[in-house]
Image (cartoon, helix red, strand yellow):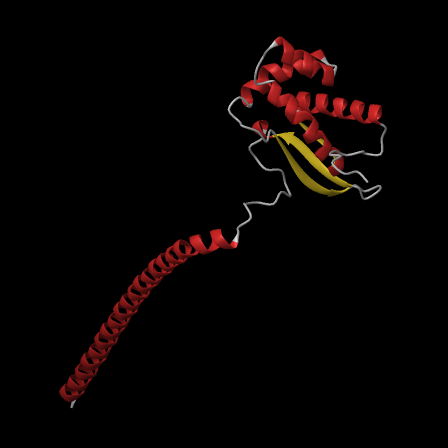
Length: 203
């Protein structure tokens, strides 16, 4: 049994596994974001985050220890330069793993692993928001209900104002129509009276 044996075998011997993680760490430091299988991404996070943590303190000893793992002087320079400046105030959690589905050939679960400080925008397909617990939901529920009630009341007031405006517009239109009908009726009566007067004069 593998009790107390933390880590991932990845189907490789120890030397092959170290070489794989070293190459992936170098690629991650240089490109800030790589795509790999989910198991390799999890193993890489355990391998590279202690190296990033060492880069916060630029000493000869730390550089030698990081170079011992990476075996790439350009990656070490990048890590202790630009990357160390970005992660200087972060107390941990330097990488982010985002699942992106399965590979077409063998259906292996794929993932993107990236440095958090170089990408503030979440990749497509990432789940948004934190998971809410019952406690947080119950505490925030009253505030949310109050906000919803206020928004509903405001919407109702706006609807009432719109209805009042429509009613006023309809009443105005009806009054105009009534006045026009009355004027038309008065004109017809005057024309009839003039016709009757002309008939009487002829008689």
